[in-house]
Length: 435
Image 1 (cartoon, rainbow, N blue to C red):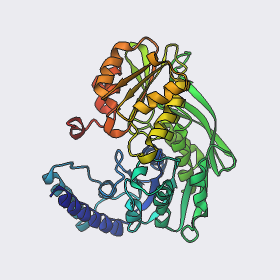
Image 2: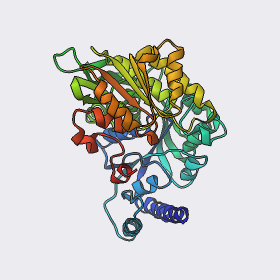
Image 3: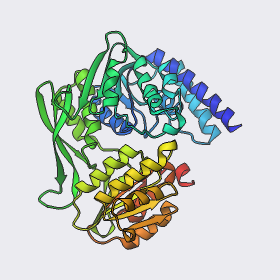
Image 4: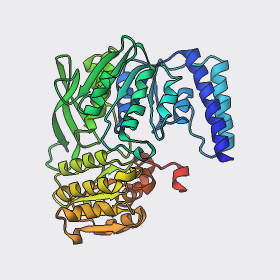
């Protein structure tokens, strides 16, 4: 019954969203990829809002339900039928009466199952498509026949691009870069972005930003953004790692193709705040530093997060708290062990959470980490409670894992301001807290 109810709601919302697009005819930026969709969406919004009236997907609204809700400007009603009914009524009002509507929509588009993006591409026409990183082993790969099938699903967003539109590709990933060979929309403009001056828009000269006048904890990253020979410095405060600039350089590329000047691009990015759970820098108890990367986990993203942990250069210990990486299918054991090998190079102490994460521990052991420096827990609450007692002054802690492992609970146990969890952490809605 619940499945039937959801199918009906999705169908109605999509019909309403189609009608709204026909009536108001906004221009659309759509973003997909296996890493960095939400942060890129937020960065693009920060840049475009300097010049246009823009609406973005809230949180990670990127599904068959989330995308129509964004188009309609509505919230998630979760399991409340009355709230879903109100959403439908509000959607009808948008169609039947005239409202102020954004010039641009910035939509995040995800693919949990085969056909997800192809279905959306059949009814949403896109002016700018952005494809971020496509790692060798993406999350959700177990639901597809192969990694190539995942890539093709993501690439199907290109089919939605209007004639004369723009396709922005992350050129540092060969799998993404190769998509420029895929037949694009007529007269579509291909723009490459990344960290190489062989691209159209790039970031370079990365530096860790630390507290003013102190050789202490990092507070963000600094880099130069270059567009057609013009260059300007940009700071991203609140996140760590060169990959934090993937979203910034994608947003700069979007601004560039839409006529936003480099000074306005920089001003937009200076106001960009990385979303919760994406390598966010948070103060911890006992003068520790937390890298909160708890939104989700794939092998490539976890390796990048471990590189960010290394950048903290703590006076105390580097601690990696890593949960299961789900939906990896037949490559799960191998990929967890690769992450463990990386953790052995970076971390002084490794804490793993979940059944699959035991293979992270095995990978670390096989690569020289001492057994006494590895702890294993069944769930995140137990791990957080134990970690709280183990922390020493000036430790740096990376926390990461797939959504259902709920690694944000570890962060809540050790953050300096747990009363701000609702503001700073992922999955703080009442519906999530009940689970």
